[in-house]
Image 1 (cartoon, rainbow over the protein chains, first blue to last red):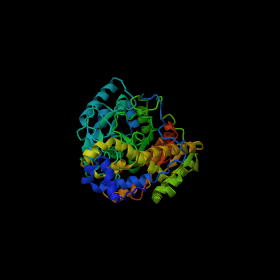
Image 2 (image 1 turned 60 degrees about the vertical axis):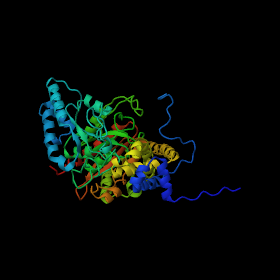
Image 3 (image 1 turned 45 degrees about the horizontal axis):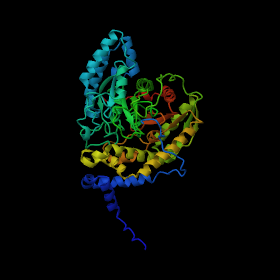
Image 4 (image 1 turned 90 degrees about the horizontal axis):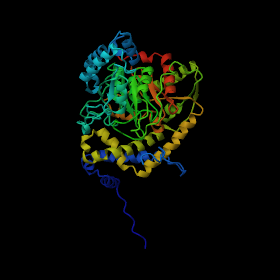
Length: 69
Length: 463
């Protein structure tokens, strides 16, 4: 049996859901334009990065075992 | 020379020669501040009484032939995200309006140990990210070359104050270029040291892996003097490198003869095409350095657009982890610019943050690779002269047009300095970048350029 497709959410609904999940209900109510602009900026910025194809590329700063343990 | 235009090095020599005293210098600076603060708004809080007490103490010590260090009796402006014991650290925000610092930040303790006098807390973009803003508890600082223009940011008051002769040296912080931008806009010297060289303890964080503390000065020699005082290992700062103290000005007189300088032309030619006057200033700087004996060659690094994106993803993700509690409960207590610049962190998935940190590893490798063939990089700092401060659209257009964020991403030492004046009388700028912990080499190249030009002698016609 094929599962029912998930209905597509409008961008505004999606942003509202993400903002709610982030605990930003007050900001969403009082500053909806700022929340929408922030979501758009986040999307644009993450899309401008070429993620390394090589899984061996580790993040910076390097892990430092023994520090803080 | 009038006392307010003396560099820290010159003032120290005048103190030693007994031709000037710390009280006389501070008195002259306070008079200038009194005259110019109403138009420049460099200070959030001036601590004149405590500064005068410290100046009198410094004067008594000099009389007893006791010199604390190379900055003995030198007044310093401090960006208001850096803790000074007993003073508010507001971060230029209503969020922290009543936040009194209990102890000095590590850099303040080091400056005091070197004899410096804290003059007050200087204006910043809100939390070092939101500005210039007119909806905050304090007005934004303005540019001494033309108060209708932005002094750069986020260390705005530190840059404006040094350029206006309100204090000879100042502290700023630099997460995406915030020491070097005001230096570029105000025609002074701004140094972002190697990541880990200067402690960030007691500095309100914006982005843990991108934050740096650095000096703003009118001369390269003063930048070296400040770095001598500021650098050193701090076990309480997790990013602090186990470095030894050194004299960063030791090579200032060596010049650039036979130095290999990599000119990153694509930053200002194709990545973000610069204002023609900025391009001309950069080409002229390359010509001057070649005439001084440097081997100037064109090199290629990763593009500015991606450097900027990596910086923004990391910065906003880390900043969100700091600001989320207030953004959830008090979003209206931020100015709009800070709110808009901090909220994106809520919408960046963890995987994209780690992806940006992985891309960062590759970008660091690319810059390190370039340093196999050259000793120093020369590139643009800002692509445009300072925007009009009340023209929000122009500021929004020009503010990201810069080549400073790459070296927050990589952590290499980078210095911005004046490289000319536009037809409108606003400073033009350039940037030198060095290998890790070769901050002295950066200062050496900058000093050679400074000697070969007279831009550092130009002063804004204000006051």
